Length: 377
Image (cartoon, rainbow, N blue to C red; front, side):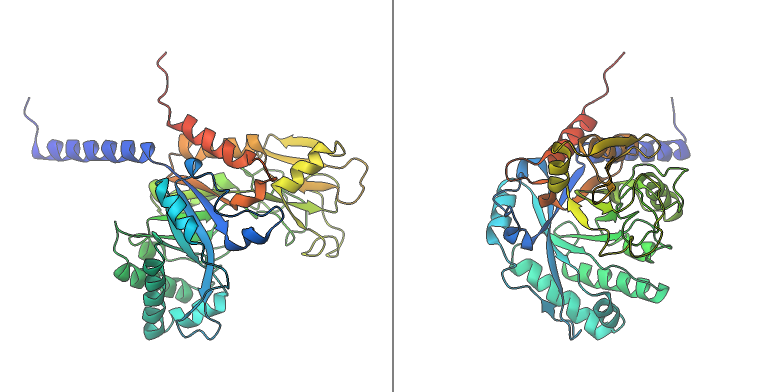
């Protein structure tokens, strides 16, 4: 049978698409954010504790633009941990340096072409000199279209110093651009390897009601319709046109405790909902609360999210968090159902109880399961 030129071209495109999809499916990312200050936590967590066989990428957090906003860098004392790089590379794991810091510094630097070029050069020099495999930006967040455009120019400038294929560039970005943060995806996507979409903090001290920190699905009962992993994925694939292979979805190794009882309960006043009134709890801390037997474990089927309630209302009455089941479900959703490029967590030490890490174990197991070929009937 003879193919027309048009048909032959279509066949080539289909073959290439299948090859790319197959390659992508075989190499998903499981990225871990790792804070340098974890070494000083209780229990301490350093590069010797990281399960390198369960992750593909590590983002070392973070250095920042210097306060003077002249394009130089601020590196916290004690930040560098050379054994992190050597241990990761021995296991075939890539390590990015995270550049975060005050949004005002990014705004001032990005808007000035000379400062922006200096900043990009200094980031690249630091990356190369210290053996990192790339750079992740944690700029939270560009608030105007001009700031978004300038940030895209910074990414492009950095790429000129860190060649694609040799170094990675990524960005941690809002789960709900437009509602929180603005980004020039058309300008950034050609230069970044992937986006780490921060699909957590949908509810917290800033909301006027209790709700899930990182729900897989948005419940129709959520008073604020605050969003979910699913709604974010739809927006990034559809509205923003980001290729699936460039999306990493995030999950949280922490939760929030509200001085309210029950899911979707409203705060009678801001004294009961606010940074001081709604503390952050690590998964390790939450696991201890569960083991005490005082809390009731609940599961919201509409959101695919667990939560805790305290029937005696002693102290906090509602805790939003993720457990092994919800974490597994998210990885299955991202890699199996939506065929995205990867998953990540904030932050790798937060499920460490001094001996085990159940959430990172769950992510790794789910990733391996998602890669298994479907059995034939």
